[in-house]
Image (cartoon, rainbow, N blue to C red; front, side, top):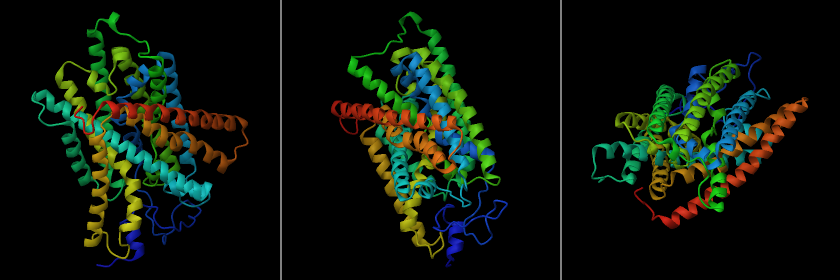
Length: 450
């Protein structure tokens, strides 16, 4: 059955596709004739989405290694600053919802309204870098967790890391047929529980292993040559930026019901309360337990007993599945604009086949890169430095200054300082990550079964 354009936008596409976003009524509600659905999610749903987007095991697990690359004082400062700055910037970005009386429900659309076309193109670029980079990284993490469970029961190691990455890719292709972020709300609720479960298990096991070790043998000094230490520090900055990556907060806010800003503020607060407690605990306890020898993927440092390690890996796989889906959505939306037939129902055969085609191409591409170059920690650092730092640390502070023009000089100083510091972090983190990827590609063959 043929659908009207209005019906198509209301049922088939996420809430920002139409180019014309008319002003809302004085109560802040969308007018009846607006073809874009208002958000339906609660503040709890917002918290689930934000927590799932940020607090993935691929973000948690490298934190002790990042602290080890910086040392205690610098590591603590970098992690605490990352938490405070991204929480602050999330509130700033959420406050720009309908800043000019119009509903902006995509980061790229908000950037266009504030900065013009260059802002739109910049956000599209950085979102695609962070989306692809994040999903390559977490697919490596998911494959690593699946293999870790497998080797407990099969010592022959016949199934390789690459095969597990492919299995995870097939799962993601199936989940990719769900229409939008809001349709993932219950799954992301489960993912939030798995985030907590993963962290509690990893912290408990780190304490257990740490107490079993001869503490006199645990070294907290920076390891390697001067060059290795320097680039390790640069890579650690990118890793910490990755751990707070949330490149789609306006997209999440679009799913939240009225009063949107109030609910979003509370949702961000709930999510960051979980993130702060779990991030800091895992990072500091993991580094305390294993010192400078901690593995880039913390779970690989854990030894005994076996069943909690298996449980942590199961939690990781489930949570990563939800995170992958959040981050693939900006790419899918761009492809939907080009490939879906707007005059037909979403369930028409041509639209179904078109969606299967572009989701398959995306998933195969991500799976292929993850399988070919499974250097987890390197991609974490690169994705954090190039993708997430501009979107999460720099642009929100700049956008707020441009739109609100605060009279308080303290706000200007804080925002300018944040932008300046993290611009340097983005450049240095990229240098460190690229160097490690080049080194690893020299030392390992493609599709290496790590």
